[in-house]
Figure 1 (cartoon, rainbow, N blue to C red):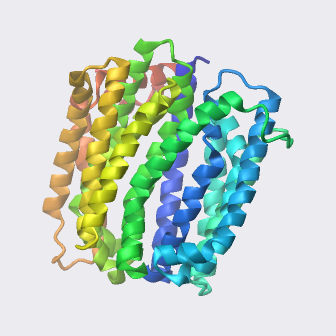
Figure 2 (figure 1 turned 60 degrees about the vertical axis):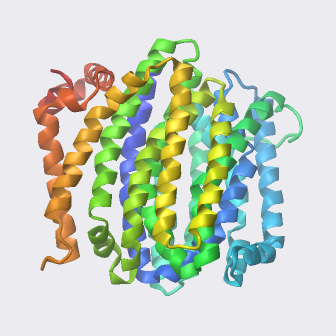
Length: 498
């Protein structure tokens, strides 16, 4: 099987798994939000910030470095695993000892025990870095998705929902986080079938470390840009407000993150192996942008158009304060998913310093904006996030287009159809949705979803060549030609063969 075919298969498995995880995450979040309420969500959202930041330090960029290397020795793999595991142990101990000062820094003593109990997450993450990298290196997204979906269903839908139903409150979310990371490690190790042995963590990783540290610094800056708003909300507005903000953020960010991570997992190893094939990389990039825009723009514009109905239908009246936050965050996710395509391609081409530079300057700008917005409201912070995401996407995408020698006209051409489709669909459900109408919020949301799917389907079937770029249709035609099981689906052929 060629690299392009393997990438297509990997992306297909990614999106099958992503769809299942989005459904599972949405169900779990709705149930947990209704059982627990905003304040416990805010406590855990604040406590998890130093944990997730520390996970990026534990990784040391070695996960990406293992994927990017053309060849690896068993000694290098063992040394990398030893190093991430050792870092996980060290960081877990540091977090336990630093729980009190961290809670003071973040503005509430309530998160101190939560940080201590969540600290083993960093060790579990360190243990799983190499097994997950081994699966990514082989583009084995089928097993990655099975492990992630199994871990999520066990952690959140199983342990989290059950303990929340028993009245555990904050600790239901803590148990869900710990179970998820433990199961993710166990399943990744099982599926990777690696025979890992501890070796010296200070030998055999020189070349990996040199590449990995650039990835680590980039990831840390990226984390700051994407999470500093949560820190600012928790520090200046309190846990209750952070609960509202975090659930709004997760509602929009969860599907965006699944789309992004699925693409990144396939794009990075594929682009690393296409470093000498510029034409294929150009066509592949434009096809990916076309596909991701066709999915993201209608979905997130529609979420913004009916944000109040969406929040009230899913979470109930106690979360009404989140409705004004969802709209700007949903629009921001469009720019986030398009931007996220650039990073793995640049890293795969051995140019991670470009993203590092962009993340550094946008992070500094974001810091200033959030400090200014912290005296206003949650809504102002949400619109500040949108502004930063727009700047970051434009800056990083422009750098990638220059690197790949793609013209701005070619890039805008693949966006024209998805933008038109998104505006029409969002406009249709905005006109249909009316919060003052007699039917319940759930009934209106169901009508909004049915209308949006209907309008999108009609437009795509009516003018498929207008909304789907030539590059995307070329990839889709190849999938149809190489998979006889779907050749007979007339509707699919209608979309891509005209």
